[in-house]
Image 1 (cartoon, one colour):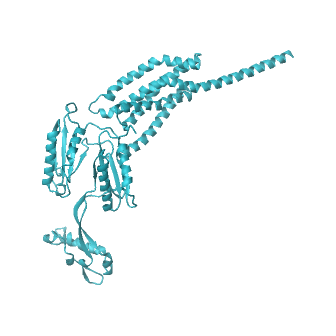
Image 2 (cartoon, rainbow, N blue to C red):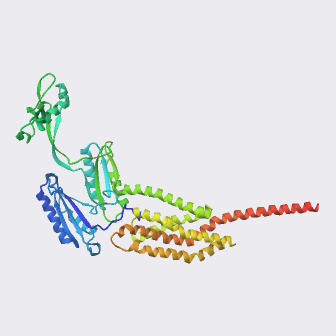
Image 3 (cartoon, rainbow, N blue to C red):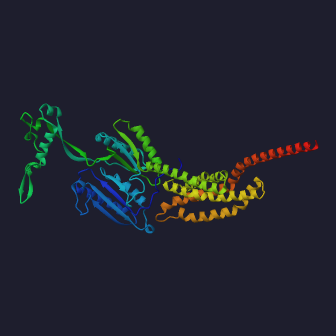
Length: 504
């Protein structure tokens, strides 16, 4: 399509926040080096900013860093006031993206800097649902790689399932456990006692109870307990070493696991290039996934993000629009005491959509959720001119003018009042629709929608509505004329019959 869709128009942000993530476990020194280099790039290339705040590693409210966050860094660039701004937030992002490839192994992303984002958390959000995290992560990373390589209008694709924290799994040989008369619960309790300790008894003194915990010495707890030193007693009284039924495996595990509706979920998120229709980007990604990612029974791929949210809202707005049209129709029907005249006036609503499309084409803008808000406002405004024209046409017909003459006379006489009313509204909407300023991105779509729809709808009211009125009422007049002629013939027949009877 020539005109695409976005959920919300791009807004002029007051700051830009860049997130950098190095490989898990990277020391804080490496993170500081990357963030310092990025800060140097900002100072050399970005114009018109107030300050740059760099955070190396995630810190708590008390300023205490943690070892697990040493591989993350954040940079916040605060911009000047809107009237003094040189580089916009989008321009700064474009400049920084050009240097992201200079940092191999580092994943960069931009986060919303306004505290709240209208729409979903990310414009592009793909969900991979599976119980097998290894397979799910592989598919998610493949999707992210495909997006990065083949969809240039999508920016910073990333997978939220981070992999890299070292962990040790205790693998149990269940068949051997059961053959020796043991059970998994008993083995788990023995391992817990060796690592975390076990409450052996209580010590009471002065009315207070104290737990007596038996636990390995501190030196022994710094290393994994040797399985051949941990014994479990089976029902036969035999002491069996855990090394006979279990062994350790070292691997890496995810930092966190997200669940939605009791299902493990991996999110692939991405942004979009400013001004790019979300339906175009989403369509390319869906086609790419359908072509490159084979379907599997245990893996479900779903789509969220701005496009899905836009579709959900459009369904709601369609219902609201139908209710609005029905209410407007009901009010006009009660005033005209007719269903035909309100139906003629309602024709201006779909015709005004042509004007909306034209103004968006001329200004090279895309539709968004605020366009639907403007269309809802337009429903109550656009019918006013039609009401004036139809009501005056009906008045002229009551005064004895023919259908054709009434349509021509009404269009000519109502031309000046309709144009004056429309012109005052249109002139008042021009600043709202076209003048730049802080926050103008949120009101401009409403102004353009009402302005374009009202302007074109007014022309259609003046030139097309008299034609529609004539077509609808001509048939009605023809039926009335035939009925009148039939009554006259009947009356004439009765008169002749009465005359013959009088002569006889």
